[in-house]
Length: 169
Image 1 (cartoon, rainbow, N blue to C red):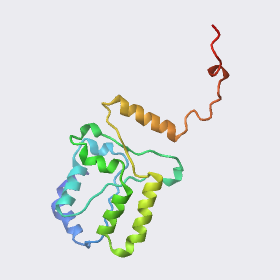
Image 2: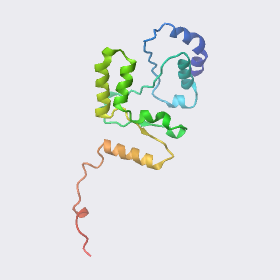
Image 3: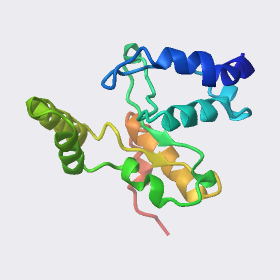
Image 4: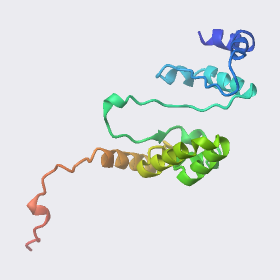
């Protein structure tokens, strides 16, 4: 399957792309098991092909809202990135910078929507990421702490009186 996709990029796929206009969005739904892409470069090659064809590309991760669970976002494989500055702006995006970029790149009638999106990002910290570098134990501890805070781990535990009694020596 993966070889067929790569072999078809320059002919069949390029022909399919000609059917879309400049302002169209194309969504490619990949299997949720990212392991299918970790050992072969097919997805990376596919993305690079789109970039060469002057497409703006972004990855979107969908979380099923029916789960109704608190969540944290983790940007994994940070140990593989040589220049951390390349991803810093994505870890904790500044809502005002986001608003400015949106307003610059979109038609004026989207201004109110852009402002609402920026406020949503700012009010709920929905798009911040914890950079996971498996070589750093402090980061792993931070992830565990964040998970504990998210699920309010230990909040329902009973207070033990002995924790507050003075030592009798």
